[in-house]
Length: 363
Ligand code: PHE
Image 1 (tube, rainbow, N blue to C red):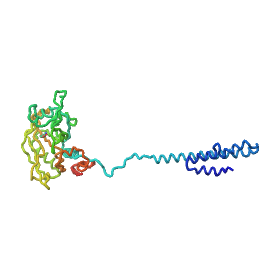
Image 2 (cartoon, rainbow, N blue to C red; image 1 turned 60 degrees about the vertical axis):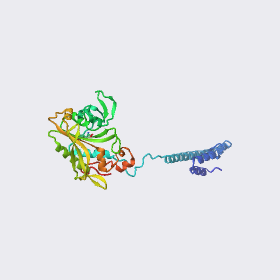
Image 3 (cartoon, rainbow, N blue to C red; image 1 turned 45 degrees about the vertical axis):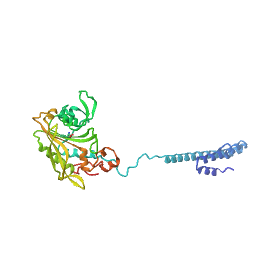
Image 4 (cartoon, rainbow, N blue to C red; image 1 turned 180 degrees about the horizontal axis):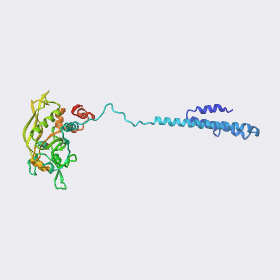
């Protein structure tokens, strides 16, 4: 006999779709037991058929309903299981500590901008691909000038539309001209003027202390009644703030640059600490800067009247300043991109140099 309750119970407890399918075949398939009951109806007397017809139809409907319900339940469980199994976590875990650091050159440039901003200097920029007029001629180095040859210049094969030779700037001094002429976007033409110009410069030279690309910072002040005393005070104030010591001693030596007259080379005193030169005191001297009063011809090339305006200019190597302050001894490592060097000498990204917080918080 068919026990419908038992069949329903078996269907409700089927654990897989396969198991459910075999239950369907066993009870409702062609040779299933409920199907067999239905077939018997045909052989019954009309009275019996009246009694058993609704009963067997009921079995068939109940079994079908139970199968459909269980099938839906098993299918949605299967989808849930698949969703759980195929889940992909697209988020990356945060690194244990922040990676990446600020390169010492960027750090030192930020420090310099901060120090000079405090003295009223604005930052000016010029192109790294220059023409020989801005890089040389306007700086009182006409074509035949021997100083041109000393710059180990990288030239481009073609001249520009004005017929000027094109080159990679050999120093940041062309920004002096651009600032006076007002062609830098930061500064309109004219004077008075107080700018610094940090940036990349290029010379065909390479050893432990020279790389074909390096960084300079230029300073230019143009105003009335400017003299060497202003230059000396500015450099002393800057170097004290940069090296964060009061015992900075400067020595100004007469020198020669075509674009300054008079020209002075500036040495800073150092002390030997464990055989290493540390800036401060005056046990020995190191050259750190080129500078001087801006040559009248340069002021004129900048479109200003040299009888009305005077000024001073200075230029120095940013890489060398970084090496002196933070103790690296091979310049080439600055540009190797070695992760170990960068994590050792780099600076935390959020440690912006400020005068109040200290311009050179070590990493
Ligand atoms: N431009 C010079 C150099 O590259 C440095 C300098 C700048 C000297 C400004 C005097 C005035 O060596």
